[in-house]
Amino acid sequence: MTQGYRALRWVIILFCVFHMAAVAIYCIPDESKDHVSRFIAQHGTPLVRPYLLITSQWQKWNIFSPDPIRRVSVYRIEMDRNGVWIPALRIDPFSIPWWKHAKTLKLLNNIQDNPDSGGEVLLSFLCRTNIVPGGALVRFTADISVIPSPTELKEMGGWNHFMPTFKPSPIATFVCPRTS
Image (cartoon, rainbow, N blue to C red; front, side):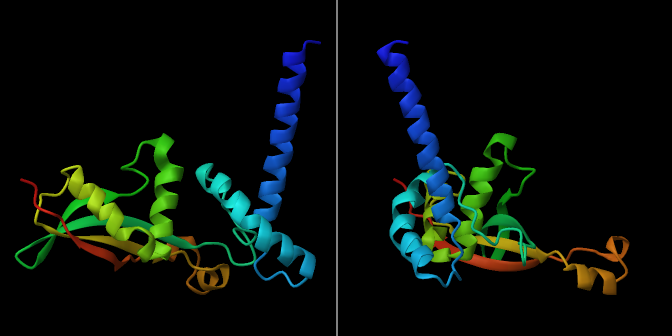
C-alpha cells in the first residue's frame, strides 16, 4: 500500500466522520431540554451550518413529524405598470430545470420564511440580469396553498373533494435602478 493511498483513505474516513457529526449536530431538536445536547447544538451548529447549507442538507429534526411541512408555494415576480401588477416571471417546479429544483426552491422557501434574508437581493439580481427593465417597481410574491391535515381531509371527504386554493402573499418590493 502506497503512502498516497493511505493518505487518501484517511481523508475519506475523516470526511465521513465529519459529515456524520455535522448532520447529527444540526439535527439536534430545538426543543431539546438536556444540557449536553443544548451545549453541542449551541457551539457546534455555527461550525457545521455553512457546510450543511452549501450541500443542501439543512433539514431539521421535525421535517417529517410530528407536523410535516404542508405549505405549497408558487412564486411570481411582478412589475407595476400604471398601478397594475403584471407577471414578469413565474417560478415553480415546472419552470426550473430538474437539476436546480432543490437549490432554487430551498432558497426561495428560505426567503419566504424570512423576507429580510434576501427578497430585495433576489429582485435586485433580476433587475441586473435585465429580466426587469430599469426604473420598474417589482415585487416578489408567493402564492400559498396548505395541504389539509389527515383530520381535515377526512372531514371534507378525501382527496376527491380537495381543491387547492392559493392565496397571494407579497414578500418583497424593489425599484430597479435605471441603467445608463
